[in-house]
Length: 304
Image 1 (cartoon, helix red, strand yellow):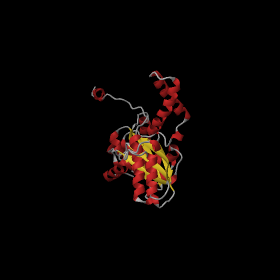
Image 2 (cartoon, helix red, strand yellow; image 1 turned 60 degrees about the horizontal axis):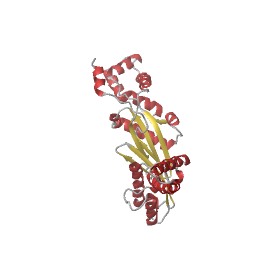
Image 3 (spheres, one colour; image 1 turned 120 degrees about the horizontal axis):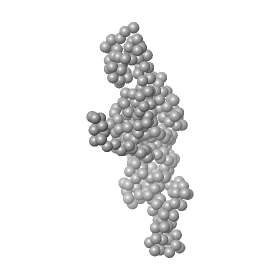
Image 4 (cartoon, helix red, strand yellow; image 1 turned 45 degrees about the vertical axis):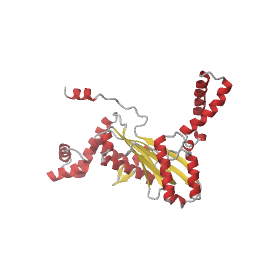
């Protein structure tokens, strides 16, 4: 069975691969379209393995919620360059991952990769196809799924993704525009100020002990006696909580209250009780050591 130029065009559209690769795939499969796709996918898997050592520290950190904000997902998917983050195909893949997590609730990235997403393909199959067509190493790095009253916020088109979970006593109050506006403000606060913990009771004892030790050394070295230093330390721990705990942070939109006080004020307005239960903040590439390339040297090396 032979193949025509129309077959080559169709295969290119289906896979995004180059014309010569498509011709080779159709020749090797005797014109069978599905076998040609398999051929290219197998070739893509080999290419993906080669790319796997390359650092993927760009990409998108996103947050998605369902229509009634009772389920949400924050997710980070990395690419090698920022250009790919603006690629509609890559963006659609990240959204597909988010929707699959919402629907099927996997426990880990490894579990997510095994799930069937669309057209009988697993997330892993689709990821490998994207690596082939986009031409970069891509990695699903992490995700978090919240079930309940949720709010999501995405900053700078995918630089930071925030998801917050609330406990609202009156479920009807959670559907109001006033609550939705409040919830978005909390998510934006998290994006802007980057709290490490929800409230003081969440700060680990070893973190607190380390902070006390540093503060005490600072105060004693300034000439204060130890017994006075202890009292000053406790005062400054309150300032530490204001920096790292969401509920204790000064509310960005109204500096006269902290986030906990603002939450209580909104709860009174809506005649209900509101509690911030949990949050997650993903920043793309956070903690990934990026390779520093010298562009001039790279270009010089290419033309030697």
